[in-house]
Length: 201
Image (cartoon, helix red, strand yellow):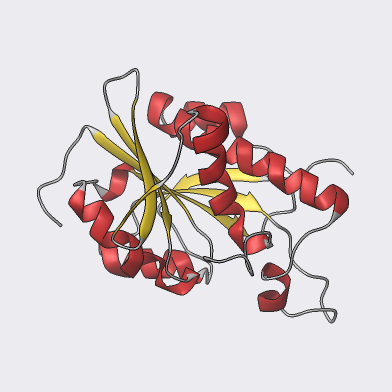
């Protein structure tokens, strides 16, 4: 990576490209990136560079935020996102990845710096390309399929319905706010404001 900048942050929403996957549980990271563009920053469009969609925004703190949707498939997230992160000189510790997590119940939102990727292929790819685990992760709970009913791959690549879908859309928006609060106030303060367990059904 080129010389890094302390003035640039990136938020990566992970997902799979294309209409086939757009409404699946595995794409909640994309939903968060969309929420940042549509709801929080009112940006008009995503730009395209290095096989990523992205937009830039100047924060009140004078820092620059790059919101990114890698357009390679999930297991290639690192290979897809790295050239853009490198271009904007974003340090790993100023990179926040929003992703689905089957080990959290639907509606839960948690965040951490570094740690295990728990077998998430998108995170694994990013760790390989960045050469470190030391980046932030905002984890959006999608629950785990009931054992014996459906394998994990089929579960994450299927679309939620009804109340679950509404819950996940709201959680994706909250995950986007969580990521912004990490930049503005740090992980501890952001966790106090936004970390929570599953919604009560």
